[in-house]
Length: 154
Image (cartoon, rainbow, N blue to C red):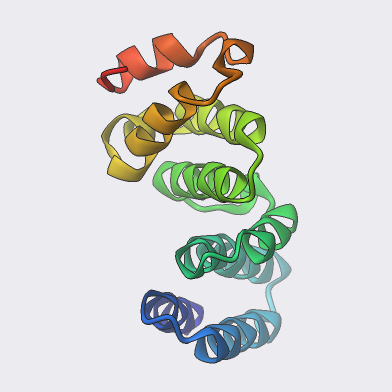
């Protein structure tokens, strides 16, 4: 049921419906809180929070995305793909928030945990290209190698 609320929240974000987005993620959190097994409850909560990051980013609300990210426990995310997606979305939110260096660190961490997500996901590849245009990209010493591994032309 948590997953359904998350999908609905993402659809609301894509449609620009902020009120519905908020409602859906409140419902997802409420459903997660009702799970009796503590471990399963934490996994469901972190899944919903990680999903919320993508949705908030789509709404252009990096502050909400970053607040959700602060609450996620990476180890609670169930799959490599989900961890990678969370970290790529975190990187995108950092960039949207105007913190390219944090975005750089998050995309490197994403590649460490889930290289396939970074190397094949178009949004990750666009982020890498955008970071390379950052005036102080010299503070990102691994960026050129990351771009090469992700087949991003700089």
